[in-house]
Image 1 (cartoon, rainbow, N blue to C red):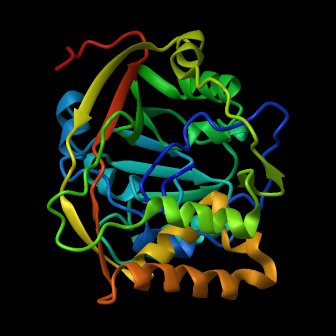
Image 2: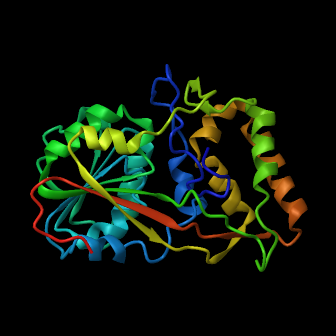
Length: 299
């Protein structure tokens, strides 16, 4: 599952055989993203800009865009950007965040499942998946995205760096007590991870490289953007992070949501009477997959 601090955690490769996506998967989570989720590593945006020689032209497709945490920071590198997501709350929150900003005139948001692509959206220079492909029927989605990319186009797969250990030494405030938060969620929702109307008792092998290779992509090139910066987190930030997760979405608690929030706040205040906690920015891992026909050298 994604970690309670709002980082990507391990929500890659979680879709179990027999599990079916449903529209309640992220219901109620979108409004908690901006406050609750930890940011990507600060130097994330310059890396694909350099590697792909992005210059403000071309088109970006962000598949499973959520409320735009990757779409919006990348938008200035393209002439046009399209974010797609099946959750109405995510699309509404993305539009709210973009309104009035520099990206407002070049970004459009489409509510649709990735399985419905190409959906008449045209062709793109770059497609991005930011910790989203694990919720999709990956083979047909990868094949559709491959057809939507121009010759020499690129697919970016962005996620938190899974192999790093983010130590708590030297943090200015007590660290967010992730294990205790996980146990509290289990106390309310049971020991098996919840996912919309279903459960995910087992993960399955990710096999992402094989999926993309079968679709005709070449690569990948791996780029690591270091994180590790200390962040101050207020109690409400951590609560928002927990409620932004599919595995602890507000709707899963039903009438017990208020009690859960009260218990969660009590847990966090007990660890920090000041109401201030610390976390570290996760490192970011970027895999670049290309379509045949590129005349741009890898960097």
